[in-house]
Amino acid sequence: MAKKQQFHPALTVSNIKNLIPITLELDNSMYNSWSRLFKIHCQAYDVLDHIIPPTSDSSSSTTTNTTPNPLWPRKFSTIRLDDFASVSAYCQQIKSLADQLMNVGDKVTEERMVLQLIAGLNDNFDTVGTYFTQMDKLPSFYEARSKLILEETRKQK
Image (cartoon, rainbow, N blue to C red; front, side):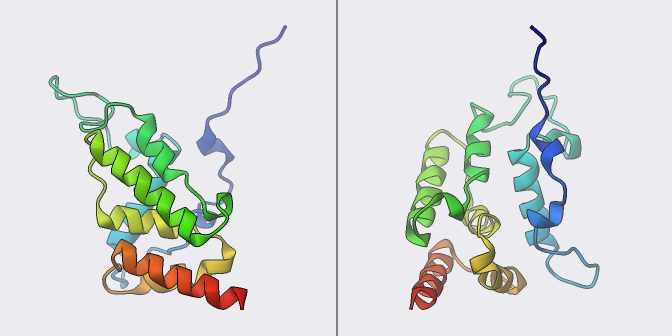
């Protein structure tokens, strides 16, 4: 039997703009948001070490310094709204996974949670996601959650 060839998940990305809706511009102040969102997707596709080489500190893990299992952050980074019945369930899962990651030593910041929330939105919430990314400062996770639930309620009516 011939061995089935395995493809790396990053090879299936045909257009990065489908995953990262923010365009990086020199005169725009969105660099931090864009950078963080890009790093999240690189981590999800297990190619972050091509951008940021792992540290060679002998006292720490070579993959990440704080995460015992390198797959845990990838599970957080692959959450999509389409996999849930409602925005509320989607946000609950993000918060739950962030709490679990924090319990095992991976610091999940409020900004990272909001960026993941935005990254996993579908086309129905594209305008809200764009609004969040164009703000001078990202909203808190609970503010973003509330705005998305309001938008979902409005669309259902």
